[in-house]
Image 1 (tube, rainbow, N blue to C red):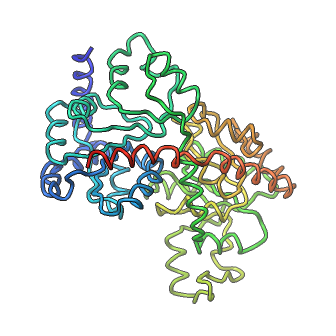
Image 2: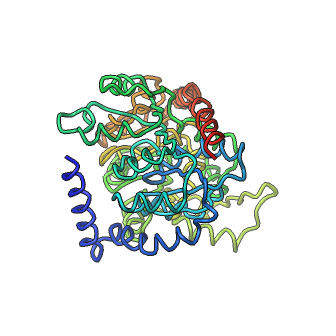
Image 3: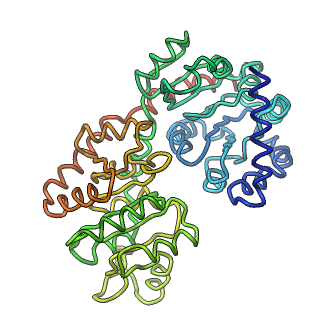
Length: 435
């Protein structure tokens, strides 16, 4: 079984290197790992005894961030290594202020795992949600490094619970403790004899509530919302299937909302496609930013003043920037979250935390919060443009129903906060014992 998993890792790496000349993501994965060991060696002295937190990408990092913030509040001097598997995660957080160093995860091999530990000698390790790399976990276990899996969620269809999942089940034994999101995950692990488990909840709820508590606005989005009385729908983390659905639905509405679209990957090609697809007139975020900076002084609170006939009155605004979505949702009257017609929905909680009712596609079974929001009457699943038209039209005609749905969404998020406080004490105790 180990031979098969090793072979799979080698074949996967070869496939990525072969695809790199032709595929931007594969190319970024390969190029990003060049010079990895030189960078780690250069920072090794500063990383001794560090807290090592590993995430697949941005979403998982955001889940781990509340725990990292709580630990750094107690130990501001503690060095921190952040590693990512994906290029998008690394690029988005490579300059994070809480990190001593941010790096790609070295390829999973026995040699690489031993080399990494010999360089950084971590005191404690956090892996977030889904990441399982056999050689890295085995090395951590051999060196008696306390290793915690946080915000994990397990489903019966995962390899751990299949007849062929021996190698996967062995990885579970490498963790010091597993903090899972729900009781179903604990029961599945209990069926495998894994009992070093705590049902702690999902730290994403804490993360989005902190963003709300921070209170910072997004001036351009705020000005767009205030430009007239028509409600604003923010469509966040959209893919082409979501965008085609939105365009079709909006053509069917007599009185559609104004639309702020935030594509999941705002490449030039994706943004240009959006501009040609969405209800006109359409403005580009960065161009509108430049226009407002040069042509209009802000008010005393820093917000631009919308003038009749200017671009802020556009039907559609396309955001071609990253990193603003979680705060931008506060300037919506309703939200559509993308991904539900592809591999799975993106973060519903970022919108719901602001008291915004949320719409999403049908592929959400891996995300407990989707069904939770449906059950709470704060979220709605749609399967086609007709259903999307119906939901949005109802909320446009009945502001009270829209507000009640938003309130239900906010209550759902608030009622599930608190995972960070359940996880952090164990990690802090581990740090105190092993530094």
